[in-house]
Amino acid sequence: MTSEDRRTDSGIEVHPVYGPDDLAGWDPGEQLGRPGEPPYTRGIYPNMYRGRLWTMRQYAGFGTAESTNERFKFLLAAGQTGLSCAFDLPTQMGLDSDHPRAEGEVGRVGVAIDSLADMRLLLADLPLDKVTTSMTINATAAILLLLYELVAEEHGVDPAVLGGTVQNDILKEYVARGTYVYPPRPSMRLITDTFAYCA
Picture 1 (cartoon, rainbow, N blue to C red):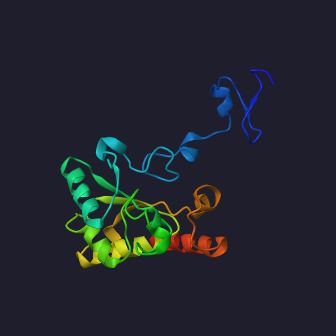
Picture 2: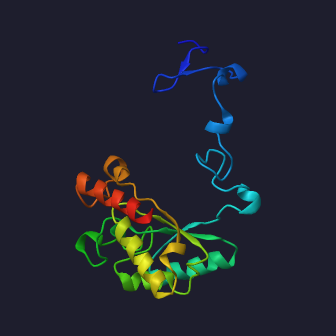
Picture 3: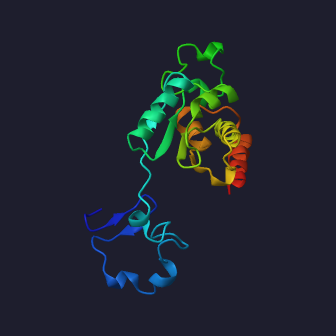
């Protein structure tokens, strides 16, 4: 293979330079669209960051729900515009903090959430109707999303105004990390049910 003959891993030829001839038959109006309109290739908002700045969030979570809540409040007061929650390994694997397999890992690389009471402490006095929340969680994503929504409802926040992301990528857990809880087929069903619920 010469430097002129390049292909992607899928076998698609990659030219050294692209020009107008490479776009023959391509209609930008139909295929590229306008910002804020399907297929959203030019952005999800009509005027993008000029009208709505990107969400600024720092990945945070450690120790107890109370400690992480204090950190979230500090970050929001410092100008952060969203929350990004790191969960500890037992929470990621669906283990309670007092489970023998959780020993030494509780609160170590993220916050420990075992119950609705913990989620209440984590989200106490946070403006859930004004910030979006990112939860880096996979196997137990549906459960933690439910706890998040229940606390928001207790705070008087309509679930329809909640925003954010849940990683919800169980395949990554089988391929890379190993923090899956359920067998593959039920896991795939659970993540697709979560998609449908949130849509």
